[in-house]
Image (cartoon, rainbow, N blue to C red):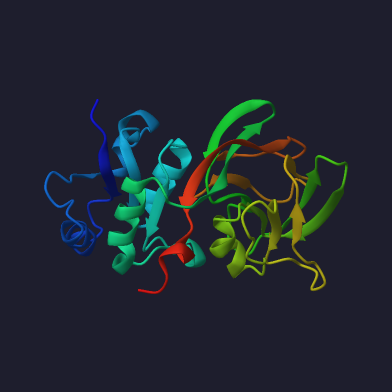
Length: 249
């Protein structure tokens, strides 16, 4: 199989014209096809030197597949991890030369009562299914540390995901390799603060007060009854490029 410099992944409703134009300016315009997130597997992207993921749905699909080539997030909403369109030419040059700098980001495997529930690249959350209903949640880490909180829910975020929903509920933005962050969602007590934890991490619902659902990234996967363990561990990793190596746009 011949190797292509760049693969591009984007949903149909995401504007990819600027990225394709930037690739053309870098001499990679001919033959570039935009793959939808639904077609993403590690195998279908493995022949590229780099993968440009345009928009959050593309990043989720590519990130969860844990491909071998490095991933270039563009307009994904991840803040510090996004690469500007103006840097695409430099990305292509670095990918072809084999000098591209990357950092590994975790892909989380999630099980409910020892049954596989799926994977997540940004965050895992337990949330009450009905508005304005709270419950009690337990959070535990592999070193034996535990805590509980009364809230609308609790979210566990990777460093990539810490720039999104977790940050909106008060969690810090994590640097790669620093672990996971757990944060209550609309906590009942004002003094509750987020926790930075080393995986694996466990979650559970402590009271039968409200219906609770498990969400992996942007997908609601299943209900979770009280006292059933939700185990979150690092299953794999996806390499994201380091935006700082390409400077400002």
